[in-house]
Length: 378
Image (cartoon, rainbow, N blue to C red; front, side, top):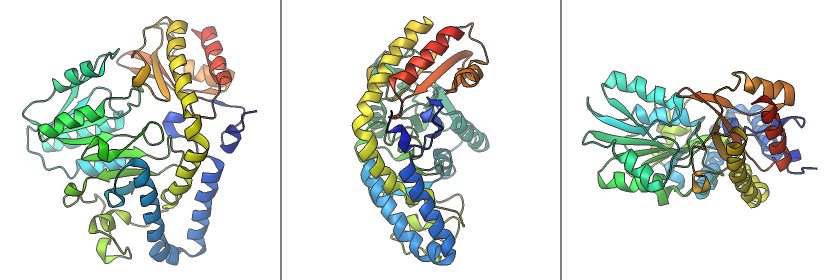
């Protein structure tokens, strides 16, 4: 019996191999979430004008310690897409300036950048990083070829969504600093997945999702804004700010904490989510990493297709792999309807990929079922 799986609310007959998309909230965290919602509804006025702000501070303190920054540098957002969009609409760039990213970035954010860039006559450069990737040095060399005198901002995933690769962002950030280029890091998949110390990275902005690997309720993400930038980063949605009920401690936080009436319960149970991670997940993560390395090899042997990385430090708790050309277009639906396996299959540049996520509730039995199913369908 998998006792850790019983702590999650997932349907027990399902083989869930897609934690990376939306996470999964464990029972103790979900119960804390519901408790906050009940407190809100018991006395909405007192909760939203008095009790909310000390609770938000407690969450900021807990999360900032967990991700390696100062409490006054974090603001909460429902998701990383919203957080990055708020940065985008604060940038003061000139026509012809360039934003550099890779061709592995998250599709919704590529669209967000592109829509804004068209209005501002700013150029988006998606530097091609061909797969398979090889070494960090080769990655950095290829990426840096996209830098020109017009490059003002680098936007880069820490862990990519579709290709599930861990990029060497720290070295890119260091090079960007030398040329006075702003760095915005999309770390949606990072918190509680791989070690994170934002101050050590040295980036200007960093966003992460808490509902993925930290297993908080949906709608809990954060944006780190370096203190030197806080005077010019303003909310896209203005509300009461310093004229409202928020006692502080800074106008920057006041502007972002309250953006109209909403349920902030997902943010308030982050201390519980972090506690659950430290108690139930952290010590078991190495097993997840080891399983992914094995799956990386097994995918290659099963499909007889080349891996998109050499494995090792390119991978965390996810791995994506190209499927053979003759794979049925409804493979995802077949795996679900015939085997009750939830796993994403997607197309990128005309090639179909499968991506597996391994969380502590997964076992070798789950992997064996997937591989057996794939061998009957490929």
